[in-house]
Length: 105
Image (cartoon, rainbow, N blue to C red):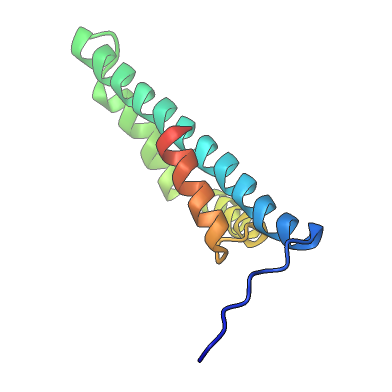
């Protein structure tokens, strides 16, 4: 017969479980709001193009220049990788917090 032991509910155990949960919630909340802003910008640009205020070329040219600049893209990518290294994304409580932040944030 196998006995299942309950976890030790010490302060260290609770902190190790709750801190990644809170970090995940905050990251999910930030990602959700960033997506909202991105979608709002896309809708605004589409409305401005439809109204004839700007042309599609005025939007595409700066975006193409941004994509072509390899130094800027690699710098942003390196910075994002460094920030992602701080996140406890292998923790189940972080993933739960991230999901809650994305869905309810």
